Image 1 (cartoon, helix red, strand yellow):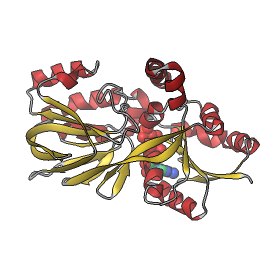
Image 2: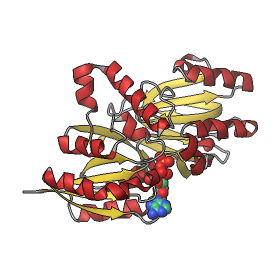
Image 3: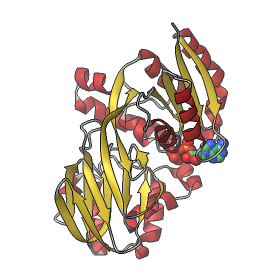
Image 4: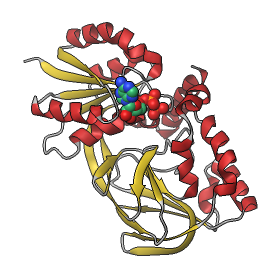
Length: 321
Ligand SMILES: Nc1ncnc2c1ncn2[C@@H]1O[C@H](COP(=O)(O)OP(=O)(O)OP(=O)(O)O)[C@@H](O)[C@H]1O
């Protein structure tokens, strides 16, 4: 029997290239034994609705073609279901953190090849209150940068946009009083930000949570205590090499269940988008979704160094585009 796939694509992301490639994508999937149909998203939230609809029709595979925003919406559509379809990914965004973490090629047809090849990797999904995320959640003044970086700027300069916006916002960055309970431990005090990472690819900063593992059932929790500007500059320099995690003002640990609260109003950032305000509970759903990816095979056959080199190559390729 033929397998059935549903493509959910954002026609506006990736310079609208996917729309043009769609007929070839359909032919290729057909030849590989997939009966495929496609849905073009129309607005924010539509990918979640389309993914829920796809559940009703019992598709074997959902293919998300778009940026991390589209992917996040698709995950939010399927995460609650008991029987979840396998997930294919065609990265079309400006940053594509999740795709890079899973070594999904930037090229549309190569990404389709990854799906056809059929290697699957189980991936952890984060649940924050009632919504789901796949890359990162966080809060504190510094994290407000990522959704304030205008998308036009992001399209032009990629990850550099965050630096530019970050510098602009520097005077507004201040510490806030927060309480973070994580797997029975407690941090209470003034912090600049906290980050809860699932992958080690975050806004193009590969070394921010350097050893995040996509399917070990753990979040990587990073808390940056109150620091002055000089210390912040120093920590940012260390962060480019992943050495910030040893700094005395940085708490860096693994946890599965995290509760964060504050008396102050602190905005949350989930996968690069505004995610409401504290308090919040973060729960790691271990290996919740099966994603088509050659990651495990490459790791097994060539080792983790090759995986890291491949991620670097994908990132360079994307910045050049
Ligand atoms: N037809 C549409 N027109 C406008 N916005 C849309 C449409 N379809 C989806 N969107 C919204 O655009 C948001 C961003 O899209 P997406 O993440 O796919 O691309 P991107 O912004 O190019 O990528 P990146 O997040 O990597 O910069 C989605 O979260 C969705 O809410």
